Image (tube, rainbow, N blue to C red; front, side, top):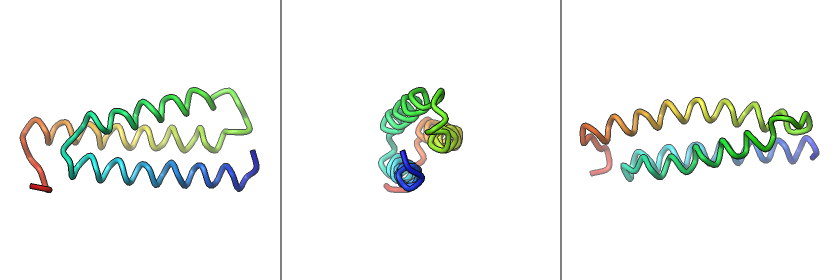
Length: 86
C-alpha cells in the first residue's frame, strides 16, 4: 500500500467517525454506534501485525478510543432521555 492509499484510508476512517458520531447523537441510537466500534476493532485486528499498515492501525486505535468515550456519552444521554434532535 502506498502512502497515498494509507492517507486516503485514514481520511475515510476519520470521516466515518464524524458521520457515525453525529448520526448517533441526532438519532439517539447507541446501537448504531456499536456497529462502528465493531468495524474499527476488526480493522485494527487485521492491521496490528503488518508494519505496512501501521498508520492505519494507529489512527484506528485513536478513533476507537475517542469514539468509545462518545458512545458511552450517548448511552448516558439515552438513559436520561436527553435528546438534541427532538
